[in-house]
Length: 456
Image 1: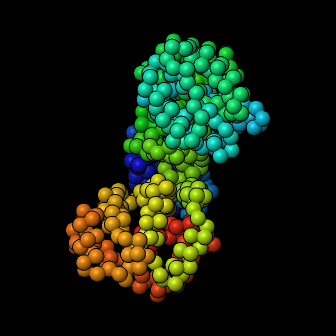
Image 2 (image 1 turned 180 degrees about the vertical axis):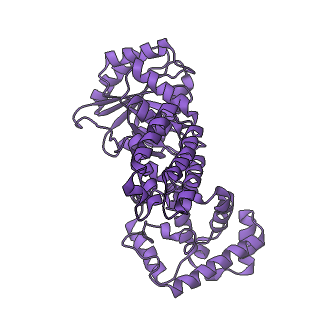
Image 3 (image 1 turned 180 degrees about the horizontal axis):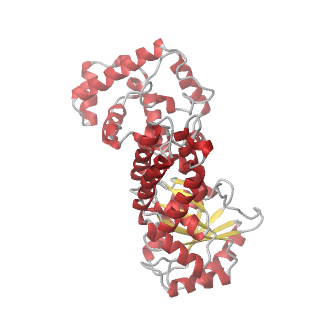
C-alpha cells in the first residue's frame, strides 16, 4: 500500500509527543528530526524536506502551540497543513474546452511508466461528459498500438491509428481531422516513451505541439521510482513544457517521494493518481486527502466518492428490496455476492480499510486473506439460485455437493454457513442496523463488511 512505511514512521515520530501534556522546544525538534529522516527515507527531495521542516518548526515552536490545551495535536495539525501545501493545497481540475470545441491532451513519459494504460484510464474517466478519441502516436513500439486499441475497446471509446510507417506529427494532424469528422471533442495523444530521456524524444514532442494545438501536456511518472520521478518531471517541464502530472502505480510499494516532491520542485500540479491496474483505477488527486492518508488519518471523503461511483450502476429497486430484507433480518447468500462485488468495485477490502480513520495501522496480514475470500465466494457460486435465496435449504447432501463444486473441504463450507446463520440471528436482534436511504448501509453497502456485516 502506498505510503505505508512513511505513515508508520511518522506515527512513531508523533507517539512521544502524544504522551506528554506539555511540550518543550526540544520535544518538538526531536520529533521533527524523526519526521525529517522518515521523509528522506521516503525518497523526498532533500531541498524539499529542508524547507518543509523549517516551515513546520517555525509554526510549531510558538507560545500558542507549546502552551495549548493539546500541543501534540496542534503540532500534528501543522504537519498536516504543511504536507497539504507541499502537494499543492487544492485539487487541480483538468480544464476542458467547451464541448463544441476539441480539447487536445498529449500524454508523455518514460517507457514503463504506464503511459499507454493511463491514457486509456483517462479516456474512460472523461467519456461520461465528453466523446474522447485515443490516438496511437507511438510508432516505435507496435505493442503499444495494440495495447491502446485493446484498452480503447474495453473502455468503449474510439481509437485512431495509422500504423508504424507514418510520423507521429502526421498521425496527430490526421487524428484532428478524424475527430472533427466524427464529433470527438477530446483527443488524447499517446506518444512514444524511451528508457531514458533523450533529445530526439523531446524534439518529437515539441514538433507535435507545433503541429496541433495541445491544451494539456500531461506527464505520467511512476510513483515507485521516487526521487528519479522528480528528475524526470523537471527535464520534461524544461524541454517540452508540461501542465500537470499523473502519478501511476500508487498502489505499489511507493515510498511517497514523487507525490511529495514533484509539485514543490516543478511547480506543476498532480492532477490524477492511478491506484491499481484496472482501467477504472484513476482518481482525482486531492492534496488534503493524501496528507490525511499519509498521517494515518484515513480518507473518508474519497471512500464516499468510491461508494457513490460504485452505486451509479446499481439497480435502485434491487437496493430497496435488499434494504427491506436486511431491516427484517432476512439476509441471503445473494446479498453476500452483491456485497463482495461492491467491495471489489471500490478497490478491495485493503483499499477500503486504508481509507478509514485509524484503520491504516492494520497490516495486510491482519486483514482477511483475499484468497480465502475468493474461496468463500466460490462456495456461494456453487449453490443453486434457490439455495442462495433460501439458506434454510442447506442439507448435508447439498453441503457436500457445494464443497465438491467449489473445491473446498466440507468443514470450510460448514464453518461459513454457521457464520452466516450467526449473522442472520444478529440482524434479527438489531433491526434497522443496516438501514439507509439508498443501498444497505451508510456508504451504500459498506455496512456489510467486517464486524457487524457479512462474515469473512
